[in-house]
Each structure stands twice: as C-alpha cells, then as structure tokens.
Image (tube, rainbow, N blue to C red; front, side):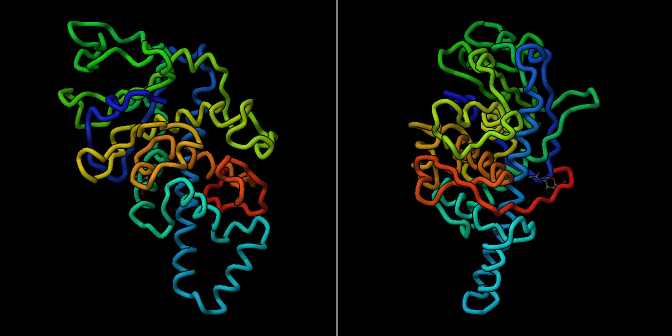
Length: 326
Ligand SMILES: *[C@@H]1O[C@H](CO)[C@@H](O)[C@H](O)[C@H]1NC(C)=O
C-alpha cells in the first residue's frame, strides 16, 4: 500500500517480454514477518491464476462471437453451466469479474492485454536462489536502511539510490511501499527496486489465504470488518508488485505506470467506482482482481446482486488450471 504515487513514477521503462525478475527477502524480515515468503509466493500465484483464467475467457469469447446463432453455442453454454469441475470448460466468471473491476468488457482487447501483461510479469517472478544480486528485495526494516543526507535520503550501501523525500514508513499511515531507482542510478535501465513492509503492517499479524483454509469467505464478503482481504499479506504484496517499474507498458510516458490513482485508491467500494482508464493503472484494482481470480479456485465468486457490497457466493464451477502442483 502506498500513499505517494511519486515513488512509483521515478523511472519509466518500456515493457519488454520474458523478464526474468528475481526477488530476495532481506534478513530484516526473518523474525518480524516469518510468513512473508509464503505471502509473496501466494501473490505470484494470484497473478498466475489471473493470466490463466483470462486466457480461458478469451477463447470462450471468440467462440461466442463466431457461433452466436448455431447449436454449437447452445451446447457450449450447457457444458459450461452445468458441468461440475470440468477443467476444460470456458470461464464465464472471469469475464464478469473483469468487467466489474476494470469497468470495461472482456472483449476490450487492449484492456485485457494491459492486465494480462502486468499479471504475467508478476507470475514470472522467481526467488533468487543462486546468491547473485536480486532485482527486487523485500525489507522489513521499517525503512531504517535509509540515511538522511543534504536535501535527500540515500542508501549507504548504494549512494546513487536516493529519495527526494523522507522514506515512506516515516510518514504516518503508510503501510508498505515500493522504491524504484532514480533515473540517474547506474542500474536505472535494469530492473531494480525494493519493497518495504513498514512496522505498522508487519505488526498486524497478517495471513495468507492458505492460512484461512476452510474459512468461508462468503459469510462476510470482501468488506467484512473482522476478516477481509486486507488481512492477507499476499494481497498487500500483490498490490506492491504491480508498482514494479519493469511492468510498465508502452503507453504514453506519463500513464505507463501502475500507481495509486486518487482520490480513494484503495478498497473494494472505491476501486469499483474507477472508470476504465483509472482502473487499468490503479494498483488495488489488480490486487482485488488477483485475489478474486484465485478465490475462484475454491469455488467462490462475486454474487450477481450483491457484488457492489462485496458479497461472495459459492459456485460449482472450477476454473481450468494449467499447473500440476495444485
Ligand atoms: C513469462 O514467461 C513465459 C515463459 O517463459 C514467457 O513466454 C512470457 O513472455 C513471460 N511473460 C512476460 C510478461 O514476461
């Protein structure tokens, strides 16, 4: 969660395919946030499920367009609506979810590509295990690593990594942030960024969806005051990952970033108000899309009549999965 968009727009990179971004977890997280590794993997899984489900929805859409008046379509719909756990059935729910969150339809190819590119990039992140320098490091030091210099803040271990203002955790209300290197940094043309989880967030005892196995998310829905998506560290991390500079698309120079589009950038009731153009560059829209795409794997979807207030309902449909380890 970021309150300042400024950090997210330090540098703008054009999207390049097949990025092999590696992340690392700093030792400052070991005691403070032992589940951060599980949470980042779950965030990556949410992104992967978003891509797989979007791909399956697109195929369905093409069929519907091509055969609107033939028996073929009727048969197709019967299969999709009534087959339990048919992992090859086209995914209607993801198209509905897409339209509710991004204020456009699944046939808006440009919008689908934008979301798919960012989610696919996140899905491709892997943990750095070979001991080299990671592209993205997660810190839980409450931003203590930043030192104040004349008119700036910098990293003693990397003095070119400077901030134009005080680090985010020193500002009341900030929970987590992503820093990308400034344009004059020697690595500005490479992929290089850091995430800080501030103590405010680290002390909230956040969980992963996995920790809630067996919990019925349909009882309270997305806006329940006691258990809601903001109790999930993975949702915060997915939000932060969308800010990574390398995901930026070759749109215009100013709009090619995902940041926190004000006013009211966060939470379900706000993100569903965002018009298409804002929704496609607002981090929390991606965080909720990823969460709901993955909740579909446990048979949950937004209710048709209560979706605006975040009501979830059970469905027998299970989206197709492409990976063997589920
Ligand atoms: C993700 O990885 C796959 C497989 O290596 C690759 O085909 C795809 O282009 C990558 N996507 C992005 C957005 O980098």
